[in-house]
Image (tube, rainbow, N blue to C red; front, side, top):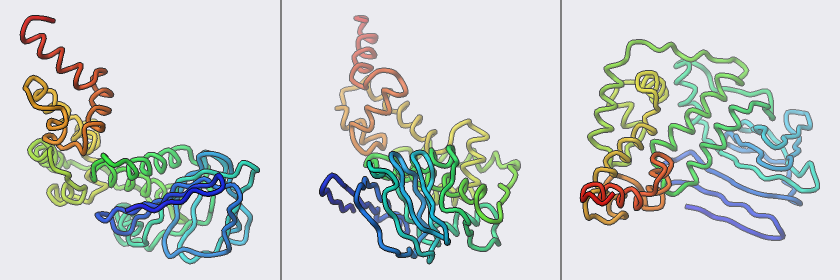
Amino acid sequence: MAAGMRQGGEEARLLVRPEAPGVELLRASFRTQRFDRHFHEEYALGVVERGALRFRYLGRTMTAAAGQVNLVVPGEPHDGHAALPEGWTYRMFYLAPQVVDAACAELAPRRAAPHFAAGVLDDPTLAARVRQAHLLWELPGASSLARQTALLGAVTWWIARHAERPAVLPRLGNERGAAARTRALLQERYAEDLSLDVLAGHAGLSPYHLVRVFKACYGLAPHAYLVQVRLARARTLLTGPDRLADIAAAVGFADQSHFTRLFKRRHGLTPGACRNFLQNRETGKG
């Protein structure tokens, strides 16, 4: 579900996904917008893409420039306006406290809700993680697994490195059996939109720990592994007569354009070009 506005050279788009309660997204470009002093009931976490945002927060005036992360915690009043004549463009997540608490529990099960003393963070890795997660949540064809994994990775990085009481990631143990069960499930049910919670329940691990264990064992996060399985199955189907749109749906991609984009990134050819190659090879015409 999305809502947007465009007026006087400014634009904003708000997005929520019914299957992910507690997560809202905002992508906006502002020049003259001035936010009155207000507070959120959620955590706000975002990245400035262009220009700069200035706001009064925690008794100080702060400026978030392009490439920096800006944030506020629930209940803390703040305002906001452009710090440069060209305004600012940013991507924001608004995360219900239970979403952040769940990520915090991955790091320390009995830890109190995290608090952050800074409103601006100069952390290129976190900025890149937040931006990538936001792009995935916007992308219509992205899987639930990819979205959840990216957001959880960004939030746990944020907590572990910037909360007032930094947390230590739990050590990886010998959980190869859990990783193997997850891989088998991905290979068996690759056409489904499996969530990270489903995989974690099957593996008997917490979501974030499963991602770390799986990547340590197989070199890819579960969502990236799932994409490779789908592409491999699709390549096999390209030798047959099915339409490309039907192949995309059969292996679990949301639409043909998403399938085509990922296939080309993996193979360097579009599915149509690969089909011609494979079928010509079988008939001896290549």
